[in-house]
Image (cartoon, rainbow, N blue to C red; front, side, top):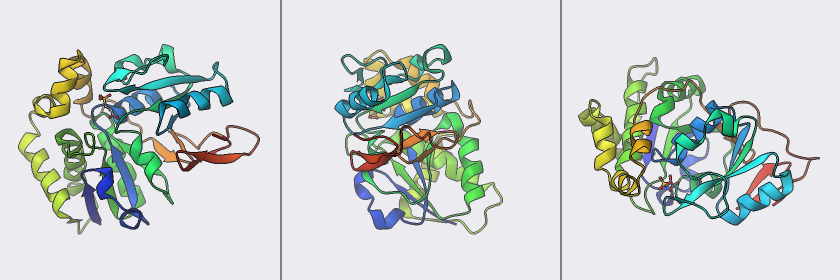
Amino acid sequence: MRIDVYFTPDSVTQKKIDGRQVVVIDALRASSTIVTALANGARAVIPVSESAMAVEVRTKLGSEHVLLGGEQGGIKIENFDLGNSPLEYKSEVVNDKIVAMSTTNGTRPFTMFRYNRAVRVGSFLNLSATVKQICASGLDLAFICSGNNGDFSLEDTLVAGGIIDKLADSTISEIELNDSAKLAALHFSANRDRLLESFQESEHGKRLVSLGFSDDVTYCARIDVFDISPQFEDGQISISDPLDLSAGDTLPSGGLPIKGLEL
Ligand code: 3SL
């Protein structure tokens, strides 16, 4: 299996990911929040590229069905129901809801490319479930790390390295890594016993702590809390088949179609 890591979405081209199993990672905090929301009963998360689009999703689907979630500069967007802290996405809040989500880095990779197969959402919280899906697909793999405002981020690289480390112990044979994937694997093996410290030392980890989100950093550094591998398909992230959101309209959201929803 060929495994390529891309440290930022901007280093990815459509050609590089065509035909691949893709895993999107934004360890702090969007992928961890998405995994938590779905594990706690949200029906789907719709990632969008701008907060106004999230509002549009709610207008179209009805405020009784949709929660608005996301951040700007780490802080909850004005008039949104939820920020980007996974700790907010408790079952009593998200159960049976659709979450329209806009974040700075983590929702971007979903809206930037056309994917010809379901994309997986990777985090430490669902590491083994992600590995299981990758093994089942058997396809060459590309990790898209969301990064930090266009720059490399240690924490996404650490999660990619953790997944690669576990794949190396799996039934998959002949793993071939690009240079970034080798670096990710080295980063994980140097920090496997100090994941939390490594998150706390990262630029984004430090920023979250300074904003008062140190519990989120601790939460996101835990391995295998959930046995789910959410998939992004038809503009939605879910743990089952995508919902058909309307009477059959399929229209673009930030360039991508959301099944049954016109934006
Ligand atoms: O950029 C993102 O997608 C966020 O995860 C950043 S933050 O952790 O909410 O600041």
